[in-house]
Image (cartoon, rainbow, N blue to C red; front, top):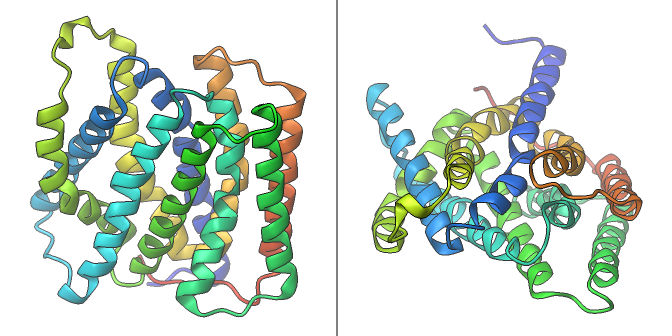
Amino acid sequence: MSLPALSRGQLGLLLGFVGVVIFGGTLPATRIAVAAIAPFALTALRTAIAGMCALTLLLILRRPLPARRLWPQLAIAMLCIAVAFPFLMAVALQSVGASHGSVVLGILPLATACVAVAITHERPKPLFWIASLVGAAIVIAFALRQGGGALSAGDLLLFGAVAASAVGYGFSGRLTAQMPGWEVISWVLVMALPISLPAAALTLPANLAAIPLEPWLALLYVAVFSQWVGFFAWNAGMALGGIARVSQVQLLQPFVTFAFAAAFNDEAITPQVVLFAAAVVGVVAISARSRTRPAPVAPV
């Protein structure tokens, strides 16, 4: 029995919010983990752990392989979500704080909406593109101000992470029209196993006992929750409420990250950081309202 339209939309937003809270802990947890585990090893380990969890669940539930015509889209999502984004983010967080990263990544909903426009062939109003340019300018201005007039290597890596994640979110969101959201991310991670497992074995830290407990817990968080479980809620939310609409719930993510960064990374959240984050959120909200139509929804 299908849910009423209003209930579908509300449930989609709720699930999207749950995903945002989970994703909000990603930067602080990565910041903790990367202090003791090299970025490449961290990326390989988080993707391999998540991939094995996903494979176990798919085997237990005896889910059939996705149709071959969907493999190219799964491969794109895999390269973006499971490889490029976590690696670029981990390297960036060696030189910038989690709160700084959250402001730069705050433009992600806008980037995701741009990808949705491209893959669904929408024709947004001019205000959408104006807001997109303004949002990009605000984020660049923030990075320049924080970097003393120059973009740091960490900022450039974060911009790359935004681009990779937006493409991955866009394609994984579109795949929810063909299969439940939890299956999308699970098959994405299973597809990555031939890469992640050998990479994890080759990059495993030599002296495991020397790594404190906190980085290991942070690794488990980004592997099980950020890389896998969070997408259960996120993809299901996009399927119920539409890619464009639910992606705007991510407006709250910088502020969730601020709370985690202050609690777990002992970062001072300055008024300047909050103001820039609020400006990015405002611009993204304007862009969302200027869309011509929401992306189509699909049953979960």
